[in-house]
Structures are given as C-alpha cells and as structure tokens.
Image 1 (cartoon, rainbow, N blue to C red):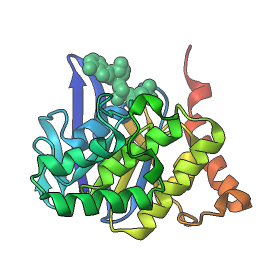
Image 2: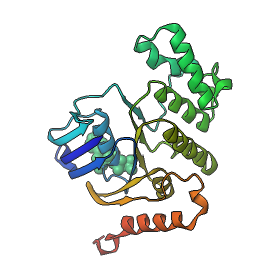
Image 3: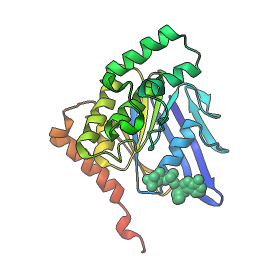
Length: 247
Ligand SMILES: Nc1ncnc2c1ncn2[C@@H]1O[C@H](COP(=O)(O)OP(=O)(O)OP(=O)(O)O)[C@@H](O)[C@H]1O
C-alpha cells in the first residue's frame, strides 16, 4: 500500500528526515513514535501529499504521491471542524463537495452517525461538544468519504485517559469493520502498541527500529502482560543510546 524509498526531507538547511525506508501493507495499521522534533509529523504530511518532496520516492498503491489523494483521509491535531456548521453539515461537507445527490448523502451521513453513536449530536455546533465528541465527529467526517488510507497525527493527545482509551477502542473497531490502512503518529507508548500492527520507532530524522506487534487487534490486550512486554520493548528502543549522548 505504502512504499517509501530513500526519502530525505529538509526545511531549509535542516535535514529532518534522513534516508527513510518504510513499507506498510494494505489494510494494516502502523504507528510512528519518537521524541519531539524527530520528524514524525513531517513524514505524515509527506504521506498525505500536504508537502512536496524532491529526494526519494513515496508510492501509495503503486502511484507516486504528488499532492493529496482523494482516497486519503487526514486527521490532524486540531480537529479541523468548521465552527459555523452543525455536526451534520460538517460530516456532509466532503460528500457535497464530491457532488453526491441528496438522498444518498442523507443515507451515508445517517449511517456514519449511527456507527459512531453520535446521532444525538447532529444539530449541535462544534463549540457545544466535548473533546471526545469532537474526535468522534472528526472521525465520522473523514470516514464518510470512504478513505482507503487514514493518516492521524497525535489524535488523542488532548484527551483525558478514559476518553483516550474509548477513542482508541473506537478506531480499532472501525479498522476491524472495514478495509482501511491506518498510519498513526503518537507520543504515547501504550497507544503505539494498542493501535500498531507495525510500530515504527524514530529518532532524530531516522527510523531506529520497526517492531511487528503480534498482539495487535485484541481489544482486551490492556489487561494482559504481553501488552506491557511490548510497551517495555518500545520504551527500551526509545531510550537506547540516550545515555551515551553528550549533553
Ligand atoms: N514548517 C517548518 N519549517 C521549519 N522547520 C520545521 C517546520 N516544521 C517542522 N520543522 C522542524 O522539523 C523538525 C521535525 O518536526 P516534526 O513536526 O516533523 O517533528 P515531530 O516528531 O512530529 O515533533 P512533535 O512530536 O513535537 O510534534 C523539527 O526540528 C521542527 O522544528
């Protein structure tokens, strides 16, 4: 699905991605974790086609990425809901832009509201929603266009612990119900392990380690010791080499 080869990216003279090679299979999930400033968001923006690259290659479904793709759904940290539109209209917008006729549009929006259990929010405005509700509406708005690739950037970082787990469960359930590839940038080790079939650990512009997560997909995993063993492995890789750095 995604193939990144020898990708380098600089902002001016600062090299922020150096020789990135990464393959993500179709209909799998991948989480990207690493210290602040290591280049995670930049990599996600490049996959989304939001910024251009000149050095290296990015292919999605065997097509070279040049600008944003219609079938890629992107969810960034700030929700991106339009404050002057109701939940219903925020969700319907992407379908309207694509010229969907009214009856079909009403059906699709109703279905996604039901799937995400937010029917009662349909006439509210974004300012009247809690953080978790906004996340659900943002997910609904993105899923309604039926993306084959979903890119999420630190999507749950502003939420309290319980809401965060609810949204993580929701994303896992959504993934299980439909064919979609998900790439998720996070700061949280627990989130990286819960949502990542493949966990990419980055450090200063580079990929340090890729871990395949055999326990991915189990909603009950948080109550099992295997989950914490993988969390510890990720932690060790994140910390590896730190003590040898000169301050
Ligand atoms: N628009 C920009 N112009 C110049 N430098 C930038 C720009 N965006 C990011 N950078 C720099 O590029 C590097 C990588 O940033 P990026 O946002 O990709 O990192 P990150 O791993 O996502 O960080 P965080 O976890 O803090 O969000 C950082 O040093 C950052 O300061």
